[in-house]
Length: 333
Picture (cartoon, rainbow, N blue to C red):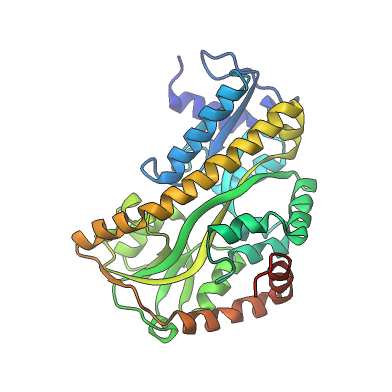
């Protein structure tokens, strides 16, 4: 059996060619007629990785091995933006991504990663009923990006620094790592900090070397990347409920039998919500672990001040109307 490294080289070099007809053969030693190589940037220790494995197992079981999903953590297949381009080209690759990056293809969908856009998992489930969001998904699909599910929520993002943060003013002058998409950059700028685009895997060294003063992340990311070793303070601003999207090629998806398409979507939604709830349930345990390791956690920053400050991000990007329309469709004021 070839090594993971050799299979990885093959998948990167020949992914698009492998799926010209949407059928890849199977994984080494297997009988799968269709195969999806699924990429994400998170460590194997993070809950999402296990969730993706659960999704893969359920799909393989329900299709009697006809559809196989091989999960690659820690960006083993490549950088997220590059993978998305391969997906557009028809490759049998999937990617865990977010609305901010998808906003590079359908600008308005980035609104879903704006400050305080969604408050909890119940609201995320309601978003599936929004005609406006469905329209965005249809536009993505026409561009070669099929969203399988957005039921994957990584809990709320907070600020992690080396000093206490209670108000937007406390972030003035601090360089905070965030992804490079406009909604991320403008959100963090609106909340008071100077945003710095940096890949997830570069954060530890970036903080350690002083390139950035902190990051805005979910709790699970901290022990997952050992960031408690270089960051001492958490501030529970909860400024973004991080909705993730599982994306595959429209061309590849349409090559699947209709039954397989349905199974792929149903099991992604099911595994996503189960994983999202599990992450919510684990937050207190992660916090306790971080407190034991010496991190200081501010549980009562001025969230109202941060919420008010965040309005500027929507205004700067011209997304206020889109946000208000979606909120109206799901009954949110």
